[in-house]
Image (cartoon, rainbow, N blue to C red; front, side, top):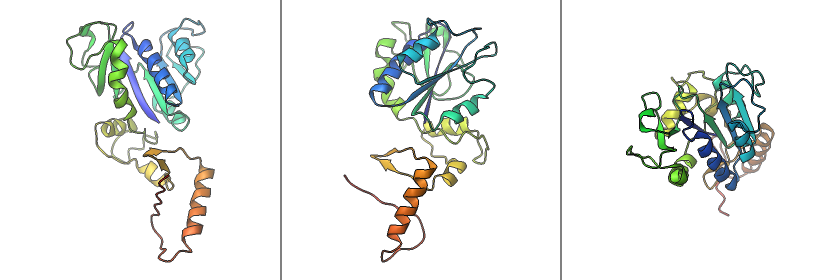
Length: 238
């Protein structure tokens, strides 16, 4: 699952950008969930941004906030919420939580809002301004066309256990890999004994399917001349 943050202050265009992104991802047959931080007391109003994101096609909108009484995902930490959804969706879009250091699209309604807190791990800038002198800024009408390839190129989020066996938190590891590093998640390396990719895209496998694939392939190739214990790689060109 790829994780993208959309950060910015109120009325800066965050929800509008996310709606456009959801539609684009749905067109590409991707499953999408949204995590939204809110300070509202209630969220049943159909005019809320959360309802708009759900109507746009997100399969799940997780609403969190200290004052929220009707949470869809209550009393879960930020990292646990990501981890619990990482095998269910292709994209997990986070609106808000700008204090966390994740690859992000920053939305602005004026240039002065681009402060030190927002200026972290920025993929690009957009917002409700028609003109802006900041580098890498595109208005909402054209931003997605310019940033979609970068969003598709995001790495997969690690295990989400924050075990720090790799020397970093999962968020730090994810951010570093987005920057082009190739740090490995120790937990994932141990767990992923069966990996299937089609045209370079990893296919999600439940444990039962992994077990069948592994036992079937080993049962077949162990009878071939030259077989020995080790890593087995099979490439099929279709």
